[in-house]
Image 1 (cartoon, rainbow, N blue to C red):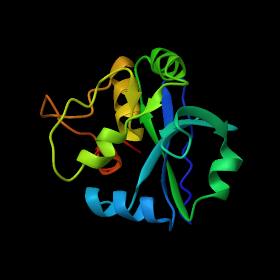
Image 2 (cartoon, one colour):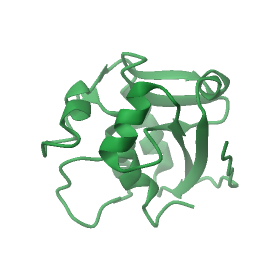
Image 3 (cartoon, helix red, strand yellow):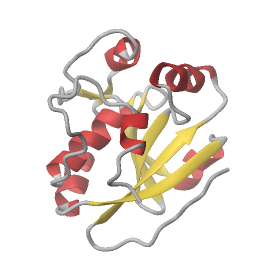
Image 4 (cartoon, rainbow, N blue to C red):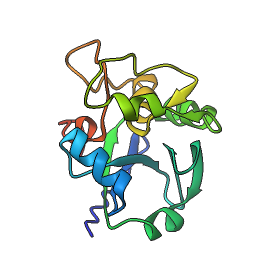
Length: 156
Protein backbone atom coordinates (compact mmCIF):
# COMPACT_ATOMS: atom_id res chain seq x y z
CA UNK A 1 0.00 0.00 0.00
CA UNK A 2 1.34 3.41 -0.98
CA UNK A 3 0.64 6.25 1.43
CA UNK A 4 2.22 9.63 0.72
CA UNK A 5 0.50 12.25 2.87
CA UNK A 6 1.75 15.77 2.29
CA UNK A 7 1.18 18.82 4.52
CA UNK A 8 -1.90 20.82 3.63
CA UNK A 9 -2.00 24.62 3.27
CA UNK A 10 -5.15 26.75 3.14
CA UNK A 11 -5.05 26.59 -0.68
CA UNK A 12 -4.19 22.91 -0.94
CA UNK A 13 -6.62 20.16 -1.72
CA UNK A 14 -5.85 16.49 -1.41
CA UNK A 15 -6.77 13.73 -3.83
CA UNK A 16 -6.74 10.02 -3.15
CA UNK A 17 -5.88 7.75 -6.08
CA UNK A 18 -7.15 4.20 -5.65
CA UNK A 19 -7.04 0.69 -7.02
CA UNK A 20 -8.38 -2.65 -5.91
CA UNK A 21 -8.23 -6.14 -7.36
CA UNK A 22 -11.89 -6.26 -8.42
CA UNK A 23 -12.73 -6.69 -12.11
CA UNK A 24 -14.06 -3.15 -12.68
CA UNK A 25 -10.90 -1.65 -11.21
CA UNK A 26 -8.74 -3.84 -13.45
CA UNK A 27 -10.74 -2.90 -16.55
CA UNK A 28 -10.54 0.84 -15.84
CA UNK A 29 -6.80 0.61 -15.16
CA UNK A 30 -6.25 -1.30 -18.41
CA UNK A 31 -8.46 1.02 -20.48
CA UNK A 32 -6.69 4.12 -19.15
CA UNK A 33 -3.15 2.66 -19.13
CA UNK A 34 -2.86 3.56 -15.46
CA UNK A 35 -2.01 1.96 -12.16
CA UNK A 36 -5.01 3.86 -10.74
CA UNK A 37 -8.66 3.16 -11.46
CA UNK A 38 -10.36 5.70 -9.21
CA UNK A 39 -9.87 9.14 -7.66
CA UNK A 40 -11.68 11.05 -4.92
CA UNK A 41 -11.27 14.23 -2.90
CA UNK A 42 -9.69 13.49 0.46
CA UNK A 43 -10.94 15.68 3.31
CA UNK A 44 -9.28 13.81 6.18
CA UNK A 45 -12.06 11.91 7.94
CA UNK A 46 -14.20 11.83 4.78
CA UNK A 47 -13.83 11.43 1.02
CA UNK A 48 -16.09 12.59 -1.80
CA UNK A 49 -16.14 10.91 -5.18
CA UNK A 50 -18.30 9.48 -7.91
CA UNK A 51 -18.50 5.75 -8.42
CA UNK A 52 -20.87 3.24 -9.96
CA UNK A 53 -20.44 1.33 -6.70
CA UNK A 54 -22.01 4.31 -4.86
CA UNK A 55 -24.55 5.03 -7.62
CA UNK A 56 -23.05 8.47 -8.15
CA UNK A 57 -21.46 11.27 -6.16
CA UNK A 58 -21.32 10.47 -2.45
CA UNK A 59 -19.44 11.27 0.73
CA UNK A 60 -18.09 8.43 2.85
CA UNK A 61 -15.72 7.95 5.72
CA UNK A 62 -12.12 7.63 4.64
CA UNK A 63 -11.84 4.47 6.73
CA UNK A 64 -14.70 2.90 4.79
CA UNK A 65 -13.01 3.68 1.46
CA UNK A 66 -9.59 2.42 2.58
CA UNK A 67 -11.09 -0.86 3.76
CA UNK A 68 -12.01 -1.71 0.16
CA UNK A 69 -8.69 -0.79 -1.46
CA UNK A 70 -5.55 -2.71 -2.24
CA UNK A 71 -3.49 0.37 -3.15
CA UNK A 72 -3.86 4.09 -2.68
CA UNK A 73 -1.85 7.28 -2.76
CA UNK A 74 -2.77 10.69 -1.40
CA UNK A 75 -1.46 13.65 -3.39
CA UNK A 76 -1.81 17.41 -2.91
CA UNK A 77 -2.55 20.16 -5.39
CA UNK A 78 -2.49 23.92 -4.92
CA UNK A 79 -5.94 25.35 -5.70
CA UNK A 80 -6.23 29.18 -5.69
CA UNK A 81 -9.91 29.00 -4.69
CA UNK A 82 -10.05 25.72 -2.80
CA UNK A 83 -13.20 26.99 -1.08
CA UNK A 84 -15.02 27.23 -4.43
CA UNK A 85 -13.75 23.82 -5.53
CA UNK A 86 -15.01 22.19 -2.32
CA UNK A 87 -18.32 24.05 -2.57
CA UNK A 88 -18.69 22.78 -6.15
CA UNK A 89 -17.94 19.16 -5.30
CA UNK A 90 -20.34 19.22 -2.35
CA UNK A 91 -23.06 20.66 -4.60
CA UNK A 92 -22.66 17.55 -6.79
CA UNK A 93 -23.56 15.13 -3.98
CA UNK A 94 -26.38 12.85 -5.09
CA UNK A 95 -25.77 13.26 -8.83
CA UNK A 96 -25.58 10.10 -10.91
CA UNK A 97 -22.50 8.18 -11.98
CA UNK A 98 -21.49 8.72 -15.62
CA UNK A 99 -21.57 5.18 -16.99
CA UNK A 100 -21.20 6.54 -20.53
CA UNK A 101 -17.68 7.70 -19.58
CA UNK A 102 -16.78 4.22 -18.41
CA UNK A 103 -18.05 2.57 -21.58
CA UNK A 104 -16.52 5.22 -23.86
CA UNK A 105 -13.06 5.34 -22.26
CA UNK A 106 -11.14 3.37 -24.85
CA UNK A 107 -13.27 4.28 -27.88
CA UNK A 108 -15.11 7.58 -28.00
CA UNK A 109 -14.22 11.22 -27.46
CA UNK A 110 -17.06 12.91 -25.61
CA UNK A 111 -17.95 15.96 -23.55
CA UNK A 112 -16.76 15.05 -20.06
CA UNK A 113 -18.22 18.08 -18.31
CA UNK A 114 -21.94 17.32 -18.41
CA UNK A 115 -23.15 18.60 -15.03
CA UNK A 116 -25.89 16.02 -14.41
CA UNK A 117 -23.61 12.97 -13.99
CA UNK A 118 -19.95 12.39 -13.18
CA UNK A 119 -17.18 9.85 -13.73
CA UNK A 120 -14.72 10.04 -10.81
CA UNK A 121 -11.96 11.94 -12.60
CA UNK A 122 -14.43 14.21 -14.42
CA UNK A 123 -15.77 15.36 -11.06
CA UNK A 124 -12.27 16.09 -9.76
CA UNK A 125 -11.22 17.98 -12.92
CA UNK A 126 -14.42 20.06 -12.94
CA UNK A 127 -14.07 21.02 -9.27
CA UNK A 128 -10.42 21.93 -9.70
CA UNK A 129 -11.33 24.06 -12.73
CA UNK A 130 -13.93 25.91 -10.64
CA UNK A 131 -11.18 26.45 -8.04
CA UNK A 132 -8.90 28.05 -10.62
CA UNK A 133 -6.72 25.11 -11.74
CA UNK A 134 -6.37 24.31 -15.43
CA UNK A 135 -5.20 20.70 -15.41
CA UNK A 136 -4.73 20.33 -19.13
CA UNK A 137 -2.65 22.18 -21.71
CA UNK A 138 -4.75 21.01 -24.63
CA UNK A 139 -8.32 22.18 -24.54
CA UNK A 140 -10.88 20.98 -25.04
CA UNK A 141 -10.03 17.64 -23.52
CA UNK A 142 -12.57 15.03 -24.57
CA UNK A 143 -12.01 12.62 -21.72
CA UNK A 144 -10.52 12.82 -18.25
CA UNK A 145 -9.02 9.76 -16.56
CA UNK A 146 -7.40 9.19 -13.17
CA UNK A 147 -4.08 8.73 -15.03
CA UNK A 148 -4.36 12.16 -16.66
CA UNK A 149 -4.73 13.83 -13.28
CA UNK A 150 -2.08 11.66 -11.58
CA UNK A 151 0.56 12.54 -14.18
CA UNK A 152 -0.05 16.28 -13.89
CA UNK A 153 3.02 18.24 -12.82
CA UNK A 154 0.68 20.26 -10.59
CA UNK A 155 0.42 17.41 -8.05
CA UNK A 156 2.81 17.04 -5.15
